[in-house]
Image (cartoon, one colour):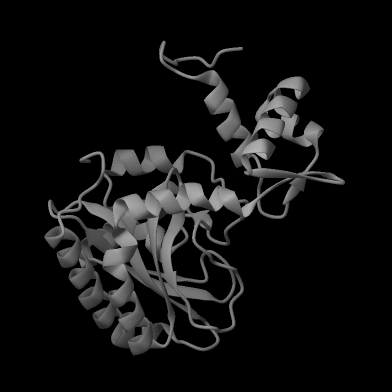
Length: 265
């Protein structure tokens, strides 16, 4: 059945193909035809035709137990990052921040109620969660996400957080609205965010906003540490000043090269 609320130019076949790609979740790298059909709400013959098309295009491969995505799917995300020009601008600053803090540093953007990592320079250290370009986590429980949510009007933040996470991860901290509103208000006032094992055990980080030439927050930058190795005091007193300085430099460079939010929002 056609989707409700779509206009005359909506291409249903394209939407269904994207649904099939995004139905794969962490912990489920291989799915059967029946699982994919069920997860997307598509009839099995329709799901099968889409999978065979994606296989021919190189985005899906067929296994003995079902279907799996191929690394070519990453090209879709890489195209986005390259079109933004964010990585080219941020890379030397990220590398310098990593050298200064001896911690992994990342840039993320908001996608629904999740953050998605779009740039990262990692230090090989003890971690409890694997992070790569394209990884998504619930936004509210991350310092990166708090910064991005704090940049939204309160009603918009509430609308975003009402959307279900697509990260496949259950966070440790699940606050009521009054609690997260107070948290975001504090982030908004001081200009940076802290998270201390709110996403998962051992994860501790600070983050600051990245802005375009018009002052809009377009992404966030963090310094991430393991709780067993780096104290909250070290994050706040040693790393936050470096973080804020780096975020300012990236924002200034982003402004100088003429980049802004691609939709002007």
